[in-house]
Length: 261
Image (tube, rainbow, N blue to C red):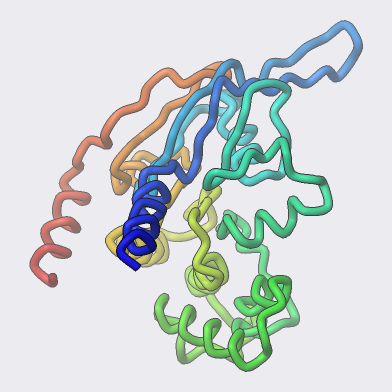
């Protein structure tokens, strides 16, 4: 029995140390014509560990959108390796990639990507439907996720009956409902006003404080300042990777969270 307990503890420690994202010398090359090559990513390597909160920044053409597609298993690298929570994506059959994405990644998009004629609750349930979760359980979990983002009173509302900020909250609930190892957000505040942006970023702060792993693609300095680590891309390469500078706003929010704890 002691040996079993020891083995179990060792397995947990290995899972804790294992990066959620492990990108190894990845390049992505497009060839629009036989004699023309576009190197969108050029030898990118990075690791993101469980509980990290990372912002990825870069100007147009820097490679951040390409990197987002690779991290989300929406595209494959031309060379190099990408391990998602220990799974080498190159070894996954095409038909199994959607299942991998559903289990490992919660997506939040700039345009919300909610199904228009479906209630908030049904939108959040959708990943659980794909995962084969029973109707009773998925309703309970979707309701809990919506309540966690302050949308418990809007379960039956259609997206058209919600503000942009409320729609993005529903999208965040959908991202967390399967309890994935990674939440990947692509310009999540790009379509929001300043008040809604603050509401959504506060939810991300809370998720981070709960130990969730967040990777946010953004061009907004205020959004990046809420992260613990900022990676900047330029010409398909990582040009900077450092702890985020604490802005007055970020410092104030950290102090508020400490006071509330």
